[in-house]
Image 1 (cartoon, rainbow, N blue to C red):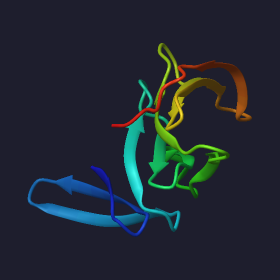
Image 2: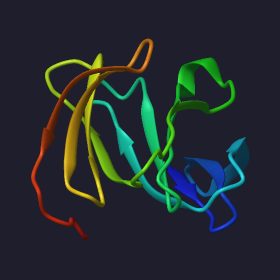
Image 3: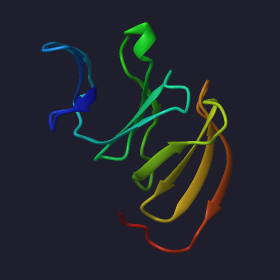
Image 4: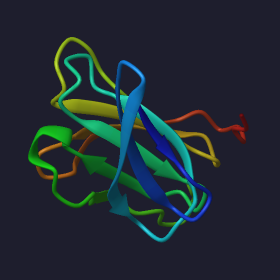
Length: 119
């Protein structure tokens, strides 16, 4: 079970029978608004309240890596494009939808909806 705290800490609860172990996986120092697993559960997207998107690979137990940083408008949400886990789509509060290549954070395409987006 993965979950985040308001302080921007990503936790992992390993639950087995009646026992559990808690592990701190990453501390990104920004409140995390959503966690999204890739379809094959190898990559976790972390979207912050401030509009930054990070990736975390549970099998590698490393730090969260900043993928996308909020520029003129905050990223409101992000999710993987399926099948696979090579691409993600994001939407900003200003209504810009973007498709990203996750390996190097290359923006592959953009579409401006010309509306403000809210959750």
